[in-house]
Image (cartoon, rainbow, N blue to C red):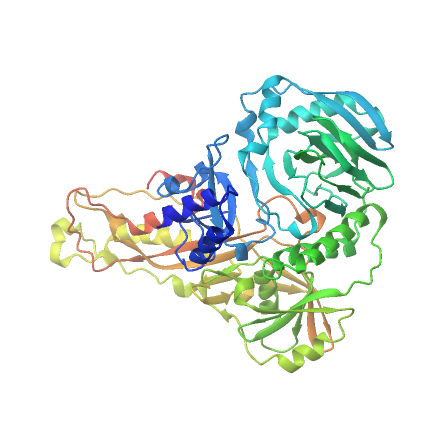
Length: 621
């Protein structure tokens, strides 16, 4: 049944099926609830659509678990290494809004000798070129459209056409060289490279236009780099009304195939379909080393945080996509000319999570001031909501009841929370030492072969050694975690939330010391067989800036700006991991058939990301 659903999806996606066939298929999918096949980038994935897993994505097949890899379709003939997966849109967070498809292999064996010629400066900071390239590279680029990798973008309400995003370091490197040769010297000052992330856009003549907008500048605080110019590479030619308009700068009505347009990102622009055929173009940007006098406006950062937050919320309420898009456009303009005032009311989410209510605009979080929840719990709920963490297998934004309110000020928030909030706590606290009971004393016994009916696994010295090493591993991951997920139960460790002045510091993990797992045993089993899993505990580990807080009119007001410049790149912002806690199986008598050698705890470790497992122990299992 699942394979039929998988194959039928791609059959219906050709556009040749009737509306009735598509509707019957959707109705059937809405009745299907199955467990996901695996997880990838924090998202549960299925090889076929289900009532929850409806968003199509393309990933490198090698990244899927080997035991389920063959169940996933490879619908792109031009890129057979890409697997089609289906994800639950409710699980998306800022880290996974977009599906960036790896297409580095597409150009790996192709000569990319690119040259920009026939330069035409249409205005200050705006140029048009023709692109010369070898036939092989031209064929690969022309074939990008035929790969069939288009998926609906989250901002479909404000743009026409289809789009997918891909990564190609080779294509970016070739374009970097071409740009260095073609742009005037005054526009190459501090130029670093072309962004290897490309957006492939396709418009049919009947499609809606791409509405007027500014491109969001790329910024990497760790490397001190920003984008200043947008690069458009047109893979098809045609005529539009106009095909591209850069506001108050230039209009392009007739565009030749393999034309390149480069323009300053401070300009608004709008694109329309060709009248006479399909329009396909790639969009990326030129990245520069940021000047030393770059300034930072906290209000711009706050608005960007709100835009990102409401992009996630729009999964549940599509009408909010336009609000998020308007926030992005204000931010993009503010990067060049400061933040302009607006008469548009602000969107607020009034949320109820297990009896604790709070209000947020995506940057500020308001909680009623009272002993329960305290500041530590308020900070924990802020992070769980902002990063859309999983609780009992469900994303936070799906678990918490949400009401959207539009208002021009915040005066109503204290009264709302005072009226509706109860005296309760949504999270429990936990003493992590309870997970690590001390082992028993060794009795000096030999092994189950010689001690058969009297063998006590919990008192054997080798099993005790492995048990203690297993506890050390689990302790190294559980102890630093500020939040633990145990099924539906969520617990926080108040000691990991340190309050200093007006800041809440969320303490994360430390570097792990290597743990050496090694042992040998007699035939018929070994100490590893006795080390079982007593519990699997989810950890939420955060690498985030301090959360600012203040008190006003009976409320705590927390301000969380994750996207501050020096916090946007580098290590992952947060990670949820299932940590197996070891226990000794005292009922195992060691009687096994030939070849039988189960090791439950070590098998559980194999499910963890490789970077969490000490290198010295990887060969053991």
